Image (cartoon, rainbow, N blue to C red; front, side, top):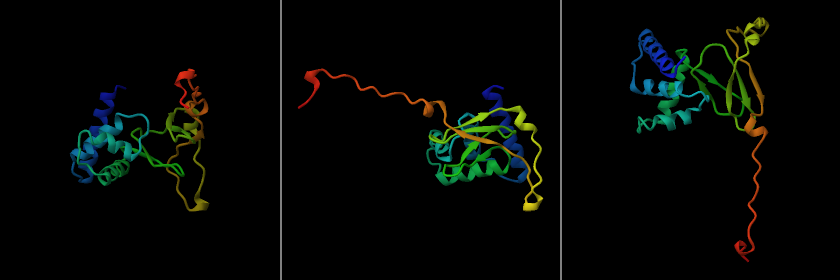
Length: 162
């Protein structure tokens, strides 16, 4: 699906959700959702804030956090939480899984159809009702696994200061 189609579909879903819940369809909601949909790197709220400020210079951090959480409540985004890391947001709300780098905290989508057919466990003994799941695999991304080697350039004798 093209980026413009994804953005159009999400905007239509935002309009419908706001109407259904009696929420105003604000410029901030539209711009923040557009910024989120345009990315595929599971940004933090601060990363969205940085991007949104190019269009809305006076937008506050609180507004961005509040709008992102509203988008999650409306089912238009998913909040990805990892222990010890900043919350990240994903506009992709269908069941999919993630690869999480334990070093740089990068989050990547991971499609694995066999994982989508798992039977939900019975958690009634824990007084918990499971609605859905997403599996996060933790490890090292290619950049953290194979860091570029820093090779200092050889200096000529006259470059060496004494």
